[in-house]
Image (cartoon, rainbow, N blue to C red; front, side):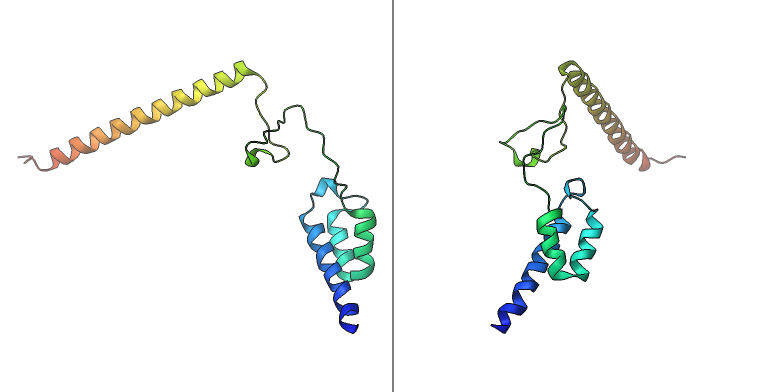
Length: 128
């Protein structure tokens, strides 16, 4: 029985501390996240119960912003705050610039490689 009376507050405190640390700052209620963590650390039982009752973020679905999208087929894109293009013309213009820049980098790399090859073949020649 003594073990349960010792382990229950310890487990509760650890759970609430981890939950408070991993919660997003903008979703924590009533106090700043730092104050909740300090409250749980200094007053484990009272702080943990207070966190569960008043500070823990509500797990309701967050409304998406105007530029956010949901792509459930790709979990790496499900992060809140992930922005997606909303203007196809601007998206095409961006992709065109990316392609042009890539082609310019390829051209410069070919040119540099050609100069290096010419430099290697020219080093063996006698300058006199």
